[in-house]
Length: 505
Image (cartoon, rainbow, N blue to C red):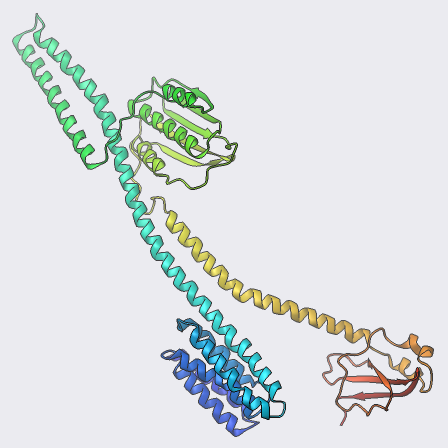
């Protein structure tokens, strides 16, 4: 409401300043139009637009065959918000068509009526249609952005759910690995305890302790089996990680992948670290085969007493990468496995190809679990890029027209200055010119160009049958009252020479 009142006050002052000195009826009509247009702008934008556009017809044919200043500002100030608020362009088209057709009858009877009609159409296009379409463009971009934000939020939520499910699947896979390894170790303990239980030379208490140890190992094995079974019921069935990286690489080579491998033995690495190494190599080879077919792959496993480093890198594929992006779910599961052993994973483009690298310490606590904000925020990044595009398009919509206008204005001004100074005839040269002389005798004194446009106010009558040339005086272009020298010829002879200025009365 405050902005509306300020807009009404500003436009009213403009009407008073522009129309007060010409006609009282124009002043009254201008104030009434401003009041009605501003009052209806928010609730009935079509009515406000119609009242605003009608001013071009009334002013052009009512008081003057030109557009008033207040009328232009009124249309620009209210056509833009109308474009923001009106959902359809049909009303704008109907209003413009109705005003254009309504201007034809008076144009046929009023002197210079079609000139006024053309001026009216130009004002409608420049001050009415252009701001309206700009407002409509901004409104559509806002609606598109809001729709994109909703979809981005939905995609982000869905992606987070999938990522969580992927991490749970990887945890179930790790649990299966633990079942296989720990179950085997517990079974060995139970077998050794049973052997002790029946061994000769042991006291009865020792046999009883061995029996309790065997029973405890068997119970632990059963409990482990039940826990793993529950995990497999909650998550999708998974295959445990088995084998060593050498066998995995050999199978990949047999399928046609060119692989250069440098593998250190993993004798000092904990079992969970060794299985994480297997998973990193497996995921790296799978990604290379899926997304970079035909590319050479390098697998490097470096192990020390403190940590193991794994690098799987594929070169640029000969035929280029396959179209379509990766869901990156395999990397999410791999990142979860590496996190649980306290390591770090990096997966990114490298030298035109792609590299998966992991640092796996042999003794470290698991890294903190990633929060929702750290889960791959692809939708959020795309949303920010879209916001940046919206801001950029708005800046372009403002800066580009202003830049073009500045270029046109600067070019026109430069051309005007060049023409102004190239058409200047010095006063001394003008004094040497005599009437009755052929043009050839003083042609060297004349400038290369003539003054254009020539001053028409106070121009002396042109002698009949003559052709006149116009040249500038030595008055500066900063003097708004133009002056010129006029030379009129007939039959190649100078008939008259005149000096006159628009400021002469």
